[in-house]
Amino acid sequence: MTPDAASHVGLRTAAREVIAVLVAAAIAGMVWLIPMQEAWKKGWTDHDVNAAMGELVGATGDQVPRQGLFWMAVAALVLAVLHAVATALIPRHWLVHGVAAGVVVFVLWGLVFAPLAGDRTEFPGGVFGTDAGAAIAVVALVAAIAAGVAMARVHALVRSTDWWQRKHFDLRESIEGIFTDEKPEAGETGYRPEGFTE
Image 1 (cartoon, one colour):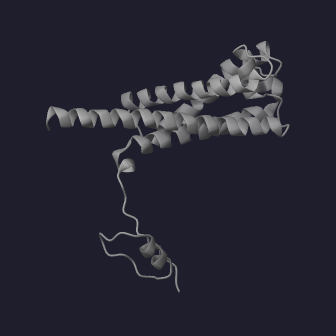
Image 2: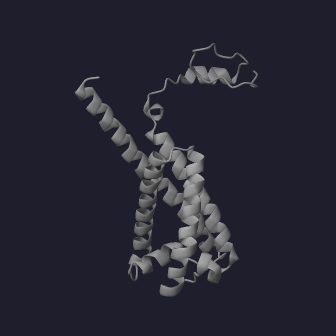
């Protein structure tokens, strides 16, 4: 391999890694924040994670939810970067990394964020959200594990070379395949699910 080709391969690998981290962070942030905010909106808890984050960083008035969302996104990006480093240093299946990341998120929320929110904002918190009711701990655990697993899976997919390769997809073959029992020969393209008949 020539030095030019090697540098292009290295550049592509780095670009895939950066994009994987950014996309994984965005997905993890959404998967974490949506259930947490829905629990607050539905009245299951008084622990408003987004607003508490906004107040913790010093925002006031209309800026509280915006700053909360911004700093949640920053936290998700930091988590995704740390996850990428961990996957490089400790190669394991993406599911193992995802569950581990979820446990880390839950522990950090329960032992750092929630107590700080309870002490420094108008929103109840306490250790693992105990001041805001038992429901928030359950929601936070589910949201954290889901966010960690989603982040790990997205990162593993987007950084792989296979995910970026163009795939052949023939829509006509796929539609025909729905209405026939015929299976494709080895090497043929198209999607022909079993069990469909005319």
